[in-house]
Structures are given as C-alpha cells and as structure tokens.
Length: 320
Image (cartoon, rainbow, N blue to C red; front, side, top):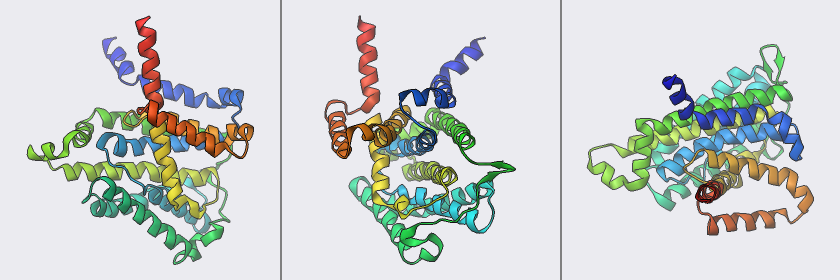
C-alpha cells in the first residue's frame, strides 16, 4: 500500500495532466475551444516540456529550436509525400535526423554561454530557413511550402480528427512522464547544478559540457517529435516552421507559464494558443497588443509566470 501511495505521489502531476488531456474533447468546447486546436495544444506541450529542460533546468536559452521542429516537420512531410503514408516510419526517420542535427549544433554552440549561445542557435535556425527557401526548395516547396502528401495512416487507421488528438495526447503524457523522470534523475541534478554554478561544478571534476550536450539533444528530441506530429495533424509544412518567430513563440510560452517547472510551459502553451485562436476573435485585430501587455505584466509582476501566481494563491489560501 505504501508503495502504491508513493508511486501516485511521485507521479501526481503526470496523472492530473493525463486526466485533463484525455478528457479535453469533452471540456474544451465549453470554453470556446474547437477540434484541432486541442491537438495543436497537445503537440506544443510536448515541445515546451523539452524546451524547459534546457532553459529552465540548465539556464541555456535557445532561439533556434525552430530548426529541430522544422527539420522534423519537413522530413515527415517528404516521407509522407514520396515514400509512404504510414506515420510511424515517417516520425522515426524525422526524429532521428533532427536529433542527429542537434548533436552537431550542440557541439558547436555549447562552447559559448549566455547571449552568445542564444545568437548562435538563432543563426543556425536561420541558416536552415534560408536553405529551405532557396537551396532545398525542390524538396521543401520554398515559399509555397510542402504540400501534396498522402493521407497519414497508422496501420489501416486514417490519422484524422479525434484519432490524431488521442495519438498526440498519449505521446504528450508519455513525454511528460519521461521529463519528470529526468528531473528526478542524476542527470536532472546535474542540470540544476549547471544552472546554479557551472564553474563550481567543473571544479569538482564533473564534465559539465557532457551534461549540457545531453540536455540540448533531449530538448531537440522533444522538438522533433512535436514537429513531426504537427505534419500528421495538418499535412502541410510552411517555411515559417523554421522561422525565428517560431522559436520566439516557444520562449514566450515557456516564460509566461513559468520556466523550471515543466508544468508551467504547458500552461503557457495552452494559454498562448487559446488566446491566439479563440480570444483574438473577440478582441479583434489588436489582440497582439493585449498579448504583449499580458506578457509584460507577467514578467514584471510574476517573473515565475503562471506557476508563481498559482503558488501565491496556494500560500494565501493556506494562511487563511
């Protein structure tokens, strides 16, 4: 009994997320959400959880995660268009290729820290964006994007509507569980030590760069899965998947939700996509202005994002 209790206690956040995610088609329409947007939220949850392992736990801010998201998306699209409509082989090839690219980029960029690291990752993402627009436009479709893919299939099942949602939701739950395991592992401890004081960690004889590279690769792996799933969700790949603004959205989602918490960035992703696709219709063409005001207010008054707000409310409730 104690073992069962400890298991549920350790995985409480994952269980709550699983319940919310799997029941989303029932409650999401009640707040104005629609089918398709829930799938996109699940996909973005996967990406920002991996992004938070890098930003929130090691303190390395990447402005180039769109590279891994976009490479995986293009690879998935090419596989579905020219080879097979089966999603599993397409996703596997896309994730492997994107992760291999992350190894090379990580080895080159992690020689620097701070803003220099951020600019280097941005430069690599923009390089891939330029390649998709020019050198590789025969494969990528250039400005028109990649279209004409076969209907994604999972065996004999068409990947459409609710099927894509539950496929993405299950993967999101599994990836969140893995992230929580990483957080509690010795690797997670090294991540936090790097963020706290990397120099002091290296004085103890630990190779911090090895753990930084591992975290970078894991984070890129999450982004690659999200990029591949985005093409399964909507069989189209636009050049904006590799754009700098795409990386900027990942950062905004994480910061507004609360970095270093894993749960916070998922809240941020859900809020951003809901605001952009539902609330913006009520606010009108100036919705970006309101989003900017909300972001500034969060950064100024709640640096810990939505998770800090939740913690404050819990503390106030407990004090009463």
